[in-house]
Amino acid sequence: MSVVDTGASIWAQLTERSKASLTQTGRPDAHLYVVGPRGSGKSSLLNKYIQPDRAEAPKPTEGLEYTYIRKPAANPTDPKDLAHLWEVSGSQELSQEILNSDKVLSPEQVATAVIAVVVDLSQPAQVLQSAVTYLQLVRANLQTSYGWLEQKGSKLPEQLRLRARKYIGSSHDDKDAIQHLGISVVLVAAKEDTFRDADTEARKLMAQSLRYVAHLNGASLVYLGGLKGSTGGSQSSISQKDAASDKAALASFRSMLSHMLFIGMDKRMKLRAEPQLDPLKPLMLPFGSDRFADIGTSKGLGAAGSGSQAALEGWLAAAARTFPNQAPSQAVKNVPEMEQDLYAEPGIDNARAELDAQWKARRQKQSPQKVAALAGSSKASVTTRQQQARRRTGSSKEQQMSG
Image (tube, rainbow, N blue to C red):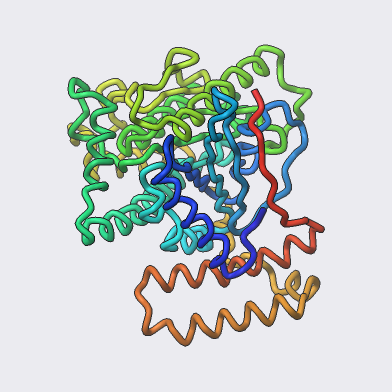
């Protein structure tokens, strides 16, 4: 399902459900947000998480795509655990507006929130900067929710940070250098199959830099390939060995994400396989399994401290030297004017015009967070026309996890 109205109805329902779930026995509803550049493989990732054997390639999405899944209970009489899954798609500008909304990672959601940042290894020049940018957007939104909670006298933000520190352990070398977000985060480097033929030094640099960014932000790191519909290559060209490797990596990822959604940081994760640090193989590093000392430093950085801004800038500079950016920047427009005219819908267009007028009228009166939220609602109406043009139903269906 896509969010195609002002967002008030569906957000209100989910907020009320989240509040109600806090008073029930068992785990409150989980909220997963999948973010990353346009075309990075977010839809394919979600499809493979829910139904790993599904071969159908997903259609491109724009805006905020919603679905939900239920995990079967151990006892048939017990209620099923529920996870709300949100895919934030489109240009970086649109993603930023959505992530700045006060409905995303809201105070009611943060205790059971999970973030998956997806980057595209088929575009190596953009990988590291995309990872840094989206993690910063997530951090900024969390700080807003944390600030609101702290103003109300809540100790939840500090409890979440302490939970993350406890998870990594007091004996970990980097316990004071990691910039914990307080929630479960996984950095997914998708389309790994398109990067396998890169030279050894390039693969090493990519692995080191992504390990650094993930570890710095208290995130897990996963390489995934063979997500059908997410690559430009032919699936039939993948060797049997690579196909088996892709399948094993996906199984480990699904186990990791399910733990984040339905168990959380309160219990240690049971790994399906040992962490994989070999840069020539698909990386699999659950949070807490890496160390700055093992990652090393970028060439020419010298003795810059791990976790410092200088160290991060050093990795960004090293990535820029190794992977020169030859691709044009993403377009800011989400829907070309020609496409808007081609698929015009008077009712939808009038609703969007009304929202735009409201936004402009209130722009000088609203807080930045509220302006961003209203902007996200206005942009969401664009999604309606695109989906109707693609003959999409827009209906919400319960998803049952496979495997």
